[in-house]
Length: 455
Image 1 (tube, rainbow, N blue to C red):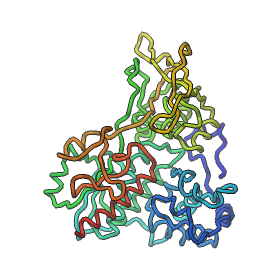
Image 2: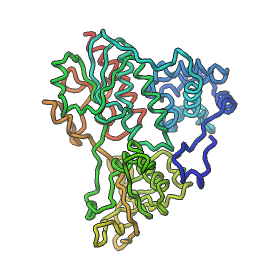
Image 3: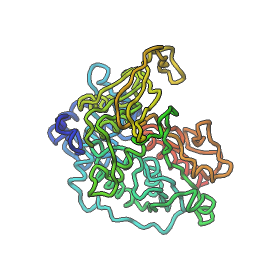
Image 4: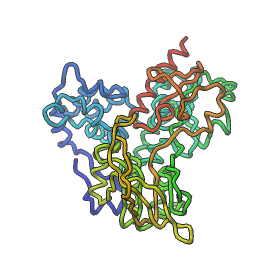
């Protein structure tokens, strides 16, 4: 896919890939073999009829293509951009065995973008107010909550989403940068979900403003907890309280949700030094590193304790970071952050590793190499090593079973918890995972809630 030149894009927050034009989309769609038993569909967590929508693109029936996608996917423009197709539908493509798979994600993005640019009256976003149907509460307006709510609304239920922030989208809005996922696209997808009859109440922290017991008393008959994993992890090394140390959550929320990259046009500032170290190597780490470059950092380092082969980030995100000049310190573990007399970050002390035997994740365990200590001169450190469930809501639900990490225990097949009217899915259950996995859980939860209420 055509994209911005790396030397140019590090100075702006505009989207990096340009997307297919019509001719490019038709050529790529023509590569699909139209398998009778398509394995790609089995690799899709939201069950899109992939060959059917690709055939429609090949035949220039673009309106039909988006209609097929929206039968099961309420966020196609999002998924076409951030879903890890290389590990899901494209991984299962028959053409993958002999060469390159059909670029299913790029084609989904094309169909969604074509739809946004060529809307007709039937695709307007006029909300439909539902006054009938049993009431269902969804907690969290991230990808899982939005998916569940939309599916339930289409089934005829009266659905309200309670969102703690002032905008919907969850990680799509506060976590993923503009250059990967433009926020006007997210808001447009949210408006489409609201048009199905879903009501979203913003600035509404369940567990503080109201509890689930309060909502039961108001007539809600089922609950879907989709509040994500918003509590950042730290390394617990000396110096993490110095000025210039951010969690990736705070850093990206300031940049994305609060528009710090447009300060002073927007009210939220952010201080990024000339030399930035990002600890971690997932998508969040890559997003943080690439954002820091665009905010004026002269050198940005990814500090990761394993090798590139073990990095959890998408291949595309690693490639884009490397193209843009991010420097990778691999097989490296931070052991201390040192500051100056003013309490500001001055340098990051590290130790080199070698890989030992595999750990519980199946990846080889990093083992420190004695005497290999070294330091990196930095004035900003961003910690991007994962998140866990925020306890504010969960602490108010008596008897709800949690696992040893503080996540909700829920059946993977039907999203049921140990409390009969409470369901849960997405990162609040699995820990930080992918957008599409959270959406898949939302679909399962909607079907389970429907079955529960019918009984």
